[in-house]
Image (cartoon, rainbow, N blue to C red; front, side, top):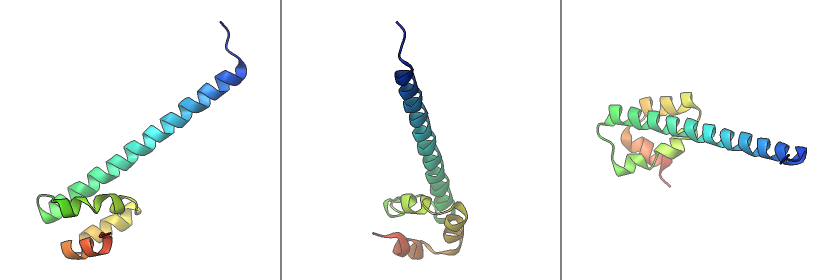
Length: 83
């Protein structure tokens, strides 16, 4: 059975979109893991309060997030990102 060219184009576009989403999720997860690691190294074993600021920190440019983690105290980080 031969598929219509329009269907083939749709299918290829859907696959590309899925791949892009997967890549974005992987990159985001990698940023979160790096931030979790930096917080653990600086403050010791992670806790539930620090884990709540990982996502907001990961939304910042990498350099800015790194500077904040290195420069601010635990309390300052929590105050800045607490919702």
